[in-house]
Amino acid sequence: MEEKEIVEINNKNYAVIDEINNNSITYVYLSNIEDSNDFCIRKASNKEADLLLGLDNEEEFDFALKLFVEKNANS
Image (cartoon, rainbow, N blue to C red; front, top):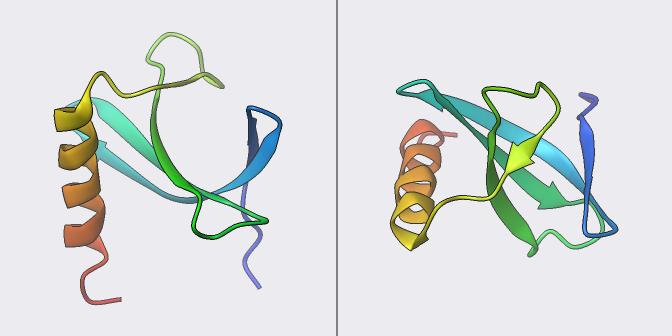
């Protein structure tokens, strides 16, 4: 079993399930370890190594989700 990095957000533990770099932005895909239906996307800060930022808007969320789907389409 592959060990996943765990991140705490709003008192919930999320496993990092994927990271995708696109145009100098790293999108981080997270799944709640206690509820697999609780999925979120954040982006890594360019200034602070361990800081995850929320996405700017719904369009950015849709774009990041499209990147994830395209990358994992054959998995």
